Image (cartoon, rainbow, N blue to C red; front, side, top):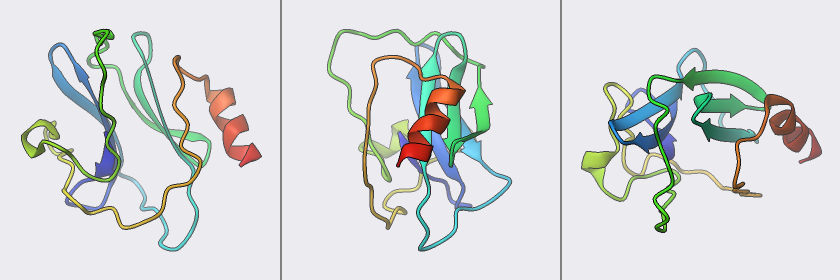
Length: 124
């Protein structure tokens, strides 16, 4: 899940067997009316990582026990389908707070390295 919390910070979240964990952009805000390249990666080694404009800005390895279930998963951007499942402490995603446009959405079947994230951002 990707969205914004009540303080306006960008938040990425994923589920583990032990609950939700997240990474947030808390030390700066995204500029309005300006293109930003947002990436989220996940692995059992590095946990969840948030990149903004090709740079790693936040990560969380508290839980890294997610394993694919073999079932279809839903990815939400800018909102949450089930509000009671989009919260981990102060990183609750606020419904319908995203009001921008999305371009070039890409989903990979493996974690990208920091240099791969940067290369994709530079090529966009």
